[in-house]
Image 1 (cartoon, one colour):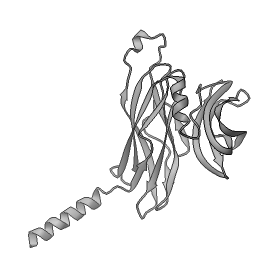
Image 2: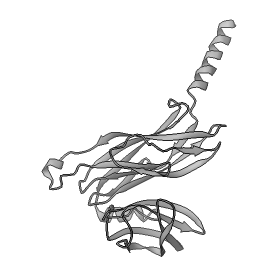
Image 3: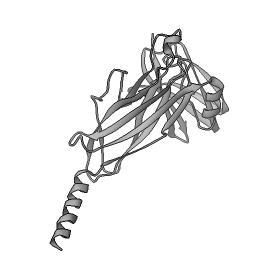
Image 4: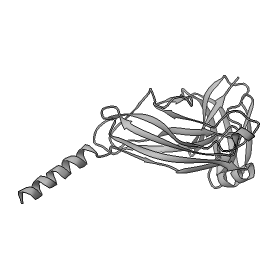
Length: 241
């Protein structure tokens, strides 16, 4: 009996030490076009603990498919980047330097991961790990596969099953476009990284919308699809000058 009690106690302590405070969910595969088309993933992070936690993010590139790139005219290999804690990081950064403070039970939908094929029909696989500042071993990871082997027509069919697709070309300096499929009238708000609205575009039904962004400064922006006063989709846009 004593051995059983000791075993149960050890099991309880082990589960307590390795319990995960965070839960992560989202689409595990994202499809897109390889021709200057940035594929994006949007993950939801939930604090399942009873404590307020400070959460950082780590990016691990599992697969960056470069098969056949040497035979193609474009020299740039596929790259991946991400946004977390109110900051967007270049492809060379693995760990976020900014964190998000999450209350017990709070849900965070601000994470954005992207894969840029730079014209190459490739497949990338990236793991995103979210962990506590107080205990880096208390982490939850999520793997996203980016399939950039589709054509523009294929992408159109995929995003028509959603409300909006990703911006393309992205990055851009003058014009960008996206496919949309909304019921009723919805509003696409373009905001800067501080949350200031710089453009409002009404959309209704489905189709392709081309937007002039040549009047905006260089930087990172977000396209927020607003319906009934609520943001239901967020897409990242990078403007280079």
